Length: 139
Length: 152
Image (spheres, each protein chain N blue to C red):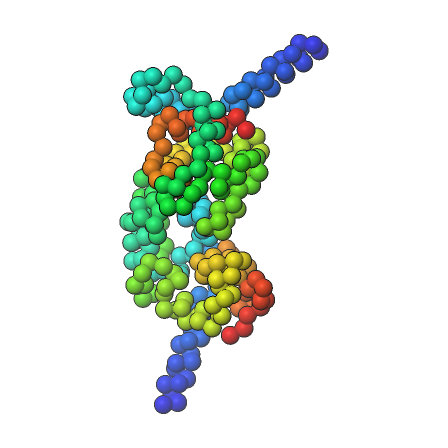
């Protein structure tokens, strides 16, 4: 019994630190991003959810209107989001609440590209994308 | 003269009824890629030429980059090629809301009902056309926020 409790405690804390395990295609995508990140910055070690959180909350006026990822996805990504411009509800980003998130590489890469552009007026770097994925996966 | 008036009335009715009930889109790829930001506008609302122009210009899709996986884009283009008709007059812009039939259908709506924050734009069909996603744009399915049912 104690062993079961101990193992549950360990897996829950691992989950809290690193998030649920990503599927094979997502892992391969992150590996590609790591290679790219290293090319872009030789000091790159690995992705970081804390850095990802900072990016997620950063406000930018690059596209003429001040906004951040939280503008649509909200500060608590376990909650539903809302896109004012498109008048549309957005299902929660947090995989703990919405298990479809971070499972389809086409979807993930598409939305990262589009939404980095929406907020920062540029495609995110490989490191930024990986950091943000790590952050989302931790919720 | 009377024949012309009858013909004119009949044409108006036929234009109206052409868009009252359109086929809902069942194609999963279309639904997913073209229905993730806005309602998956049904194929009968635009002519083939316009659909293909939209597909070929996704990099600047009404001001946004709407491109996605190139293989899927090609599949979707073929789907549109094969499931749309050229029966409609090509729209001079790419917008459904700027087609002459659309303008005619929405002409009588007081402007403030469209610009109010509960509606915002004619592009959000489903806001007033409750069953828009099912392809039902009939009058009985209209419910304008802060107004109610609308009759021509």
